[in-house]
Each structure stands twice: as C-alpha cells, then as structure tokens.
Image 1 (cartoon, rainbow, N blue to C red):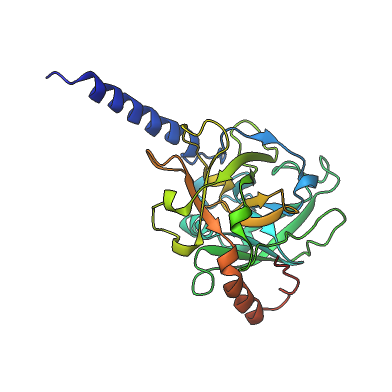
Image 2 (cartoon, rainbow, N blue to C red; image 1 turned 135 degrees about the horizontal axis):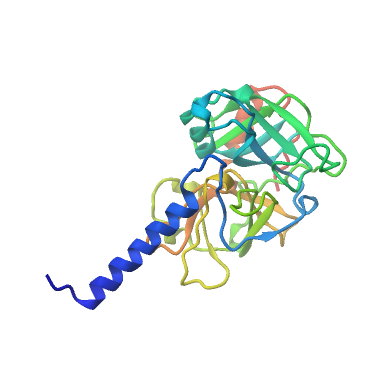
Length: 281
C-alpha cells in the first residue's frame, strides 16, 4: 500500500511527540519528572516554594523505598501550602496517607538534608483538603510552622487582580530528570481561548513558551502544583502548575488561574484553624 509523503511525515511527527511525552512524563521509580527548557534558580528568589515528598516506605509496591518527589506547592500562611488537585489525585492513586507526606522549605534541592543545606526546614503533613471546597486546588496543612528566616508567604492574585497586564510568567519546580535543583521555565500568558480543553472553565490560565512559539512545551508530574509567578509584579502567585502536558497542535498548556478562586479560599479559611494570614493583591 502506498501512502503519500505528507501522511508519512505526519505519522512520524506524531510518533515523535508520543515518544517525547513518554520519556518526559512516564512515572519512574525515581520520580524523574521535568519541565523542559529549564534554568537553575536559588530558592531565595522564590522562597515560598515547597516540594511535596513521600517519606521512605516499603509499602506502595516498592515505589517509594527512598524519599521521593511527588509534586510541588506554594506557602501561603504559617501552616498552609497550596497545590493542585492533580497532586491530590496522584497521592490518592497510590494510596499514600497524609502522614506519609513531607514538605521542605528553604532548600535548593528537593532531596536535600540538613547536612547539605543549612536553611532547610522539614514539615510533616497533618492533612490534605480539596473536593467540595476548592475543586481544582489542594490545600496542605503541616505540623511544623513555615515561619523561618528567609521564608516568605506568597502574595496571591485575588479576584480583582488585573490579569490583562500579565505577560511573561515563571513556572517553578524541582522535577528535573537530570537535577534535583529548583528550576524555572519562562512562559507567556496567552488568551484563554487558546486552551480549549474545558477542564478548568473560568479558572484557566493559558501559558505558552516565550521563545520558539511554534514548539510544544511539556510540564510533567513532578512540577504539578508548583507556583506560576508574575515576577514583574512583586512575584505575585498568579497561577498553579496543573497540566502535565499540552496536546498535539495546541502549542500551549492549561494551568490554574488563582484570582477567581479568592472567594472559595476565603470561605475555606473560615472553616479551619490556623489559616489566617493569606495576602491577596
């Protein structure tokens, strides 16, 4: 059977995209997830980021025999961090209980120890909260306070935040395949109409690459839940990393826009203790 050259080329290109996503996003035992086109950055520049880890355990079919990165989060109060519902779903998929989780603050490396990084603080997870209150988000309550020298709480974009002025963004995460160091990816905000997946509705923050806009970028599991920051405006937390990959031909990725969620976050904060101090801008 003869196939036209353009059909053959298209099939090869689609196969390349599939294999590229598989290499990037397939969950490995060592949690090798990544953002492409990354650059190293010091945690001191974004000290509200906190990697979410699974403590070593011989349960879970041997997946977490060593401390493992599962997603990321942003510190928003003394005892609370904010992440993505996708991270919650990943945790529940592996039947990980809340107390098997650990957050770290003040660290350049997700796998750092107190011997390797002096500013490192460890925070045991007390509880996770999501559905019926927040939907697309997850909130994490920790036992040990985040209050520490050099650690700040992220200023959060509120419902009156002007997203029309947002252009260049920075997506942060620890999930590199070749490094455990905190890294960032530069992105640019695109019209929400470019992200037509329909998964997030009014909470869609559509992000594409700053350069090489004809290339598709991938965001993978280890970085889900991490902060999306508008550094041009006092490093305001404007979004949460959500989708692990953009689909064929979309040239953009759908993440979570925080601004429209201010009311839900405030309502939730009234239902729980120790969640005072969120700063909306």
